[in-house]
Length: 386
Image (cartoon, rainbow, N blue to C red; front, top):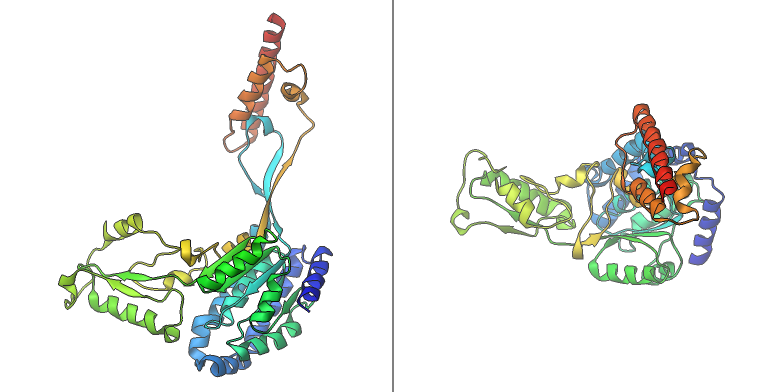
């Protein structure tokens, strides 16, 4: 069953139907309609799975998905456009750029505590990047998983995007298939199993794993505000958030101290950023870096690898293809690679390969051409003299 799903998606992807940006935008708009038109159904499923109310469903999941969709739809053309890079003298007259291309078929494995956001936010990036995708929601949030499987084919192209439900056996069978990228959110223990399975096919992975999120309260900050924010972050979604605060670091002398106004906490911030490592940092608050779609969200070390949100999801799920379109002009520049292989020609090759251009204006290009001609004449003279 799982093999048939993956093979079908790969065939659809290889047809090239997801290459046009217009197709991707249509799918994103359809996904937006799904979460807006069927919000009542989603709320009901989340009420049954997590006993969460409508307000928190919007705050914790649906608003973030909607924002990602709008951002991808508006900026996708820029993300997918060829990205010029600096040239060396040897490629001064050539087109040199990086072209983001779809990876292929992506597997997205979600988690139970945010059953919609942890599936659909990566899906937004997968669609924007032009990939096909298999979605595997957590079996622990069974009502959301069942609803997702029912709704997705009604809105998205079922030849390109499918939901596979089930428990551990179904997930294990999926992981036996060859994907072009696996995006997993969950525990470090399962993350290791996902990475082990991916290694059999040399499949790259993005692992969003549960880490530790300490909070440091400095003696010169507003302790009342700090505690209010930390408490909110700790108990949001009943504490089931991978970036929820885990413990507080502070000096013993301020444990019972309350100050009236926020003090200047800026050298503290620099010290924390310099002397610690983490996937993300929020200063004077908790969790809020997750809500900024221009910031990459992801872990480091045991907390995972890779990053997503906004353009970062698009980049994570794209192949950044190196492209050089060589000009037929100035063939004399290529003499250095043709026989006879002399010391003079090696010096010429070294010069042009080791010198980079600044931002190439027309004046710069003509200056390069003049340099090429001058160096060519000089090298020719040296060869003659030799």
